[in-house]
Length: 235
Image (tube, rainbow, N blue to C red; front, side, top):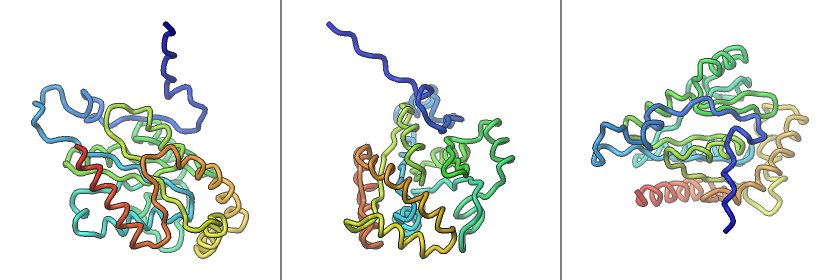
């Protein structure tokens, strides 16, 4: 009988992603503290939303969180980043904008649930944001890169649901280019870099639990909400 190959450790993956810390509540006995009884409050789900730049994932999440049925029981962990704000983005609401030195200091202090570097800028999910919301009984939604989502698959201590957002139309490249150009926040060379990265990211959509095609913002928001509702019913 052939023996099974040992599962690859997350540390051996060739990626710039690093596991900086798992919330304490998750580490302790598969999402339940050892001194808690099984009937105590269940720890929430973590929904991972990924997609290429211009797919509309951030807008979809904003629309979803604006609905009454999700406003109080689904929380977004605001991402820290070293990139510059775009357009009307607000610090502390859309992102937490910090410099590279501060970001690296937070890495050393193990303050990130996960972090990554994308196209020269750092992005990281604050550990305390995830822990605080899970402890409150809310589900958590994270808007993170494909590499970050891949790395979190190595975490077996709690339940993740992976959702990929695809741009509409057969010519997805043209769709993304139009959306990124309308932002008017980046030079053409940066847009081309994001389009090249999008080719690799879209290829990974098959690894996700659900795929949402963002052709119409309202319909896509409703579909995203339906996915979350169905996953909650699974317990």
